[in-house]
Length: 474
Ligand code: 4AD
Image 1 (tube, rainbow, N blue to C red):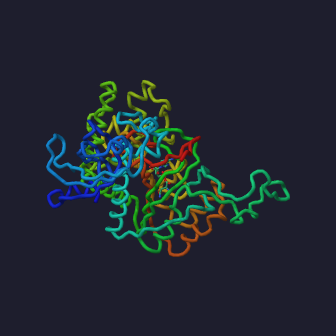
Image 2 (image 1 turned 60 degrees about the horizontal axis):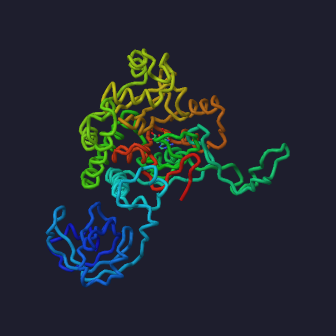
Image 3 (image 1 turned 90 degrees about the vertical axis):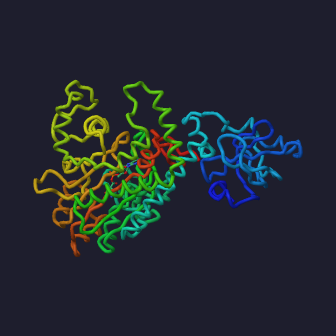
């Protein structure tokens, strides 16, 4: 039986067998036992007079033990029940002098170096349980709403975002690759007979399934070789990409907003205990900041706010006007000043809009074509595309999506103009030849969602084993 099950069924159980890891052992009598099933530790009371000295010595922080005992009402504060041990077996010793996770507060930086053990702390246990529930909520939302789950390929021959930030996949010998007559690497001799890479997005293949099954979603790993060493970027992250036939950009926005609200609400209900713990942690972190930088809301208030308020929808053109005329820009407080229409927005601008100007999540739409990917539907003005980004407080961009260019000629021209390799995209173009239709989709970075839900500030702390530039330990 797990500790979670025991705590839920406390009235019906007299005798239990539990297995878990010792968090603390005080006064040779009280074990705080955790088995990961829940944030709560269970208090195990040891009858030290009848327990061999040798066993008592081996009950150390981190040790794996099995406890058999009686469930009784607790005499002490902080828990309703406890277990009076009748038998304790040491399953795995843990030398307290070597064990890095001591019963005290460790810095997040230190714990990143101990990623194989950090999930044994309260904070990381809570974060990873929240992550699991969010993933379940994602599947539940789509499955309950008629979407099909599609596994798009991880190894691909096309650059879905056209940004060239890909990890190459090859079996060629790096020291002695086969060469063509002109002296270039001969990828015809490579495993797949062509250049291949890890996918940056499952969207293009996702579109082909939407144009057959109607509504689909992907939820898988994606890879970006962008050299962004920030608290919001990973080289390997998980993305959720729904794609819907016959949806225009407004339908797409409505879906994205409804979806995000659902998964947050579901997770807040199911993971209340963990989120309350993270809320406390968040409030303590906030106290260490100067008054002016503190969040006005607690973590739970932020989640409730997003669940219960409409996202503000603003066109890129309106947003640029706001930014151009704001005091922050006039006083040259942005690193990148906004002086003209057409510039790409940096995260400082996105955060200004969300945190200072609107004070709520914002959906920015109709971006300049020049700063967006090749597949987005060109508007009648000929210079903007039906793109949307959803910006969140404290996070910046959490969703990127668009209505797709469904017109064969327009898309073909775009691919040519950008000098992209039409040959690798032949099948994507054919979708526009055989029964094309309006369709749309978006991508949500799963770790950014976990960041928001847990109130953490560094993306490295919400994925089990972060991959970032110069770092792929574990
Ligand atoms: O805006 P992006 O690049 O959009 C796409 O990949 C589209 N194909 C999605 C679609 O329309 N189906 O990425 C989508 C989201 C971003 O909003 C962000 O949340 C996340 O993916 N993301 C990252 N998350 C962590 N680390 C990175 N390096 C990320 N790059 C993007």
